[in-house]
Length: 162
Image (cartoon, rainbow, N blue to C red; front, side, top):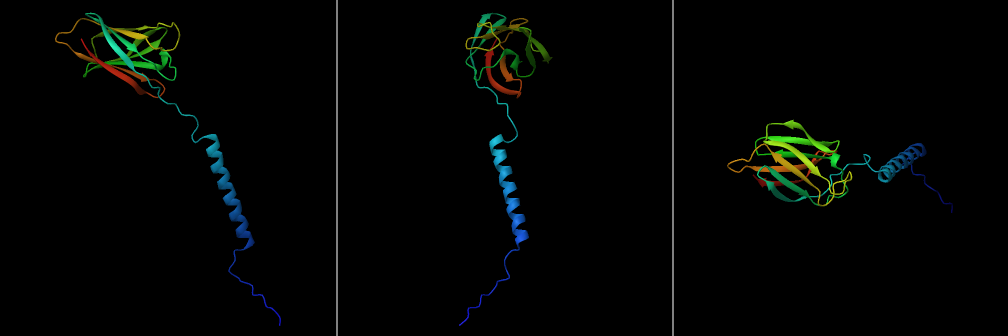
């Protein structure tokens, strides 16, 4: 007896199968490339850190002390915003001093950095001294916020009363 092989006609043609295999290979290579190289390139993240304390130095001067900020952050990478709840002033660091860039008339006459290490980085124990035009009566609460300039995100803030 002779065996008869039946040929099924429902298979995918060799051309379509080849195109599908090439397409799958290209997609897998693209996914692997994105995973290895990182999606979207490097991203900037906001450092973590805090103000540790405030200390009244005189009737018109307040010291605000920095704690540890990680990763290491330079003075020129941090903006300082002083707000009385209604008005605010923004200060940026350049040439060893903080200068006001935007102001809506807060009673602050200036901010001076106190750099204990004498380097470009903000270190634990460094501080800023905030000077008011005059002592306020009754006491006004001020909030000092440090913003990381590359991301414009807040690192920390602290509130004190004058």
